[in-house]
Length: 420
Image 1: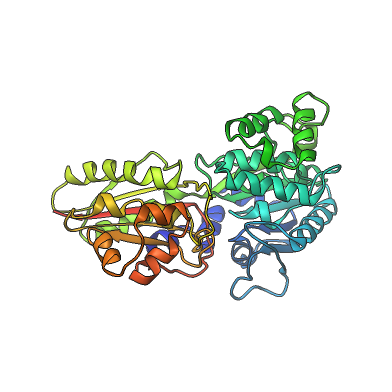
Image 2: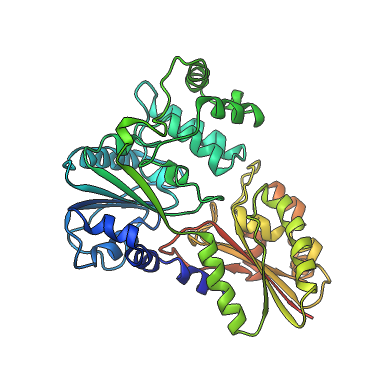
């Protein structure tokens, strides 16, 4: 089911989807194009796009964590860092801005975006030190800010995000996005370098206050946020800005597509399938038990073997030195409430194949997980969660889920299987 979900939002599949829709097909074929692909799926998306024979490509750049298989010679690749940017991310941002500025007015910039783009293509706004921007982003992450809050900060401290890449382009800009954000807001995916930004300095300040993060931010960033809220620092380009009058965006893949593919596979395997429509959010260790209660209630209303599917993206407030991620912590939070349930299994996976600081996609847990862990002398789940060390709970049990790096990223998928 998990593999079906990944296949349903693969780079090849989402590019096929773009060419299969008249509105996006016309944008790709009506003028010569310059391609910039950014994100964990960026190289694979660009490779798939460039295979189309009718595309008139003037230049193509892919920025990602790793190259795709069988990239064509015409595709330039720049490796960069995720989840925190580095010098390579800065070089990638400079190259993207330079290429955007060279797009002629009669040509089109095609921007292929996927999760991870915010860190992979990164440069601080004029007047902001890169190290201060990095420290502020890190503080927001560790404070448990969600992706909307995090990317609002990134956009306001960036030279390339929040529509600024499109503003540098004399030609038209078309963003084709593979969404990893809850709500599928095109202006949030990859921090929206090709689209107007509706978020404001005031939004950033509210997040800092709600997360009690003023003391964790560099003083220069604190001053800039306060000056921005007071109108002393310019806002990001907003809807209606003349510089972005020829910028538009389209969604070509999302978590719902992955869930639908998993649903089809579960049905083929003989399960009665229920999809939880509400996207999963919140602190992973708290969201897990609440999700399980809801999923079990829905499963028990079915007959025989039932499968419950959902998608979303939780957060983790990091307080310990361990290894893990939101999917591992979500799964670990289920170990105690699932103990003794009977024939039931749950799993949570990141569709990019890498969960937090681990090298696995997520983990699975069943009614016997807690007892098996105790037999091995592993610490109790609460203690492990306090150390943010969920990987070292599941790895000795053989219950991690390892997919390797994928060529997609649409957030996380959760599965509950019940035999009744």
